[in-house]
Image: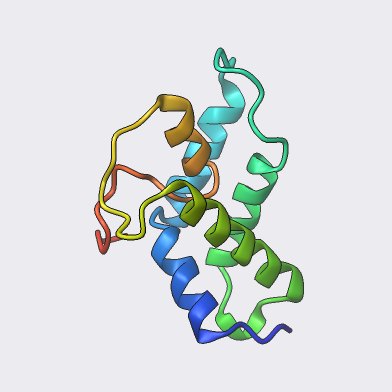
Length: 113
């Protein structure tokens, strides 16, 4: 088990604004479609599946790998979004890339999950 800081726990659950069911459905749809926008970052589908896995765990059951994946997701979303995470329309490929790791940039912050 890993010790996940309050800061990482809170940030992860702030930037991951899709439910595990929404993310699973999205990953399933993405996997079944032919992609015309090019090859996504190679780790995105794997990372998305890890996010689903993490969302299904209690904080006390997280591993060191889970903590690393949580930090990767936080870093990726924060690097591509404004700090306020207000809903933002953008390029479809950009949005889909964020959705692959559990963040829908069109969802308002604090929206029910």
